[in-house]
Length: 611
Image 1: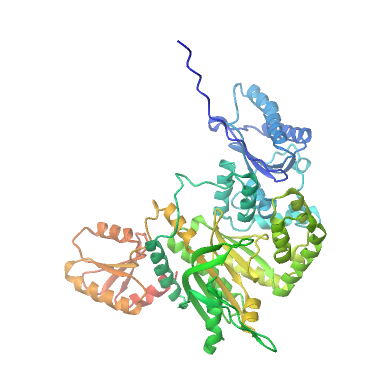
Image 2: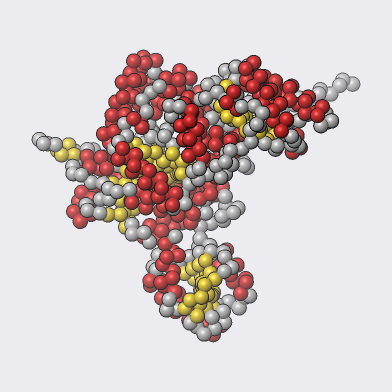
């Protein structure tokens, strides 16, 4: 009888490595064992670190040593150099550690974790993640060896300032900004899954080149999404309708077919052909051009399906969105209002902790146009090396070339003109005021200087992202709106993208089963005041017609009725006392309450519902 064949082990996944990209690397102790116990341990490890970097030509840009883990951010010439670099550290430090503490065996937990990162938008973020605690203070480096002898400055670091003192000061200022928990989670997930930390555009291009997925995968079996479910769309639209009406935005209905606004010249009028609706902006501008009373100042919103053409592609992409536009307000107040509005909307949906705000200052249209011309002149001598897609980007959006994953183009982009050189002092001060306002509103944001729009935005452009999915995007587009309408007008807007929002809600349905079915529940503490709760609900519906208000006059225990109110998603629970006049007002799931009465409840609900 022949022998059974030996079972073959599943091949181990190759560690992701991208040449010329910095790599975030992590080492942890076996079974949670501490990696350092005394100060001399740190010194010994740093000596091994410096020797390994020199031996294998690895540039160390940042590192931190803690008893529970080690973080390194390095750039290696190839995958083998990075692996041998880590192995060399282990061969020199682990025997020392085992002899000193009379132990044997492995010190590291499994293989080292590694994640390549796009330096432009993420270098400083990851450096802060490595070196700083949540309060901005620096984590441990030993006192025995000067870290400056180990650190190799990265080009992104050198761009901060002209000398080392200013570079350190600017990084300290950066570390004092609010911690973005979403970005921290994203860094941890990419590191644990050996994925790429990069912008969506660069991730897609590298995935196309390498023919594999590079982005973080969600837990569980992937779901098939064809389109947004009707009930999800209706709930989101209903939720947005209530939310936006409370903030003074009026709904407008847009046609599925549209004709771009007429563009008048001195001698003739250019008539655009009728086409499927690309976005809601043109429809809103048409409404503004027809309604003279709306030209001074107006706030509108719309919803529906848009049909946009893919960049460098002739296919039409269908997407559902809820758009918000404001006209006639040139100051930053409207930008702050819309950013705060979006933050509160995501809070209301319960997904605020899963998203991050990315924002960039473009300057006025003249500054951004001058920046593009400088980039065109810089890249033009090398255009014979470009692919057809890159050539098209050079003609229309040369700033996108800086996000290219190709090594030679990435190196070329390092010395390209920077947008900061073209932005005026007024625009920079404007951006500072916007940042201060966001900090005061408690909104965590990230200045993404690689965020550039596909449309004609100016001054500010922003995106709300969850991992690599964009949930909302927008900005200011004064010059575009003025060119289309033929007279100066200020314009600012954004669009909620329904499908990625619905996906995020569905992925977390275990914690967030559905959108709130009611906004307010009024509970009768005693059966004799059941009729008064009905009258109070009728009064509040008249004063707040957008709200969903229910009453509860059941004979269940009071704790059970409060629990049922929370299960229905009620933001406010009102408990009417036995006199039919006194009220207890509970907010969200808090057990604390405030005392009020039937005459004062309307005034107290207004400020609460505004949030």
